[in-house]
Image (cartoon, rainbow, N blue to C red; front, top):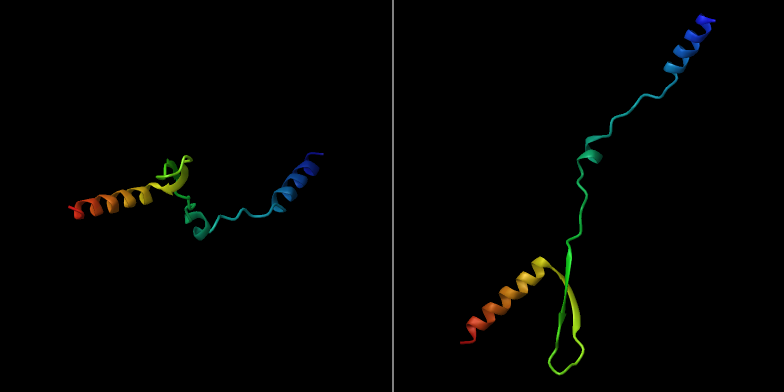
Length: 75
């Protein structure tokens, strides 16, 4: 009885598929995240309804820089 159990255990251990390690290509790829959108309500002159404009923080900063440069040049 003991030999039967031992032979079953050994045969079960040898039939398992070998565990494969993930390749470095799939393991090294970081997930690409989308930039967070920031939405603001912008009131247009002559309109009672504000419009909603969504941009990334980088885009909002770029617009603020462009506007300040234009105002400095208007003197």
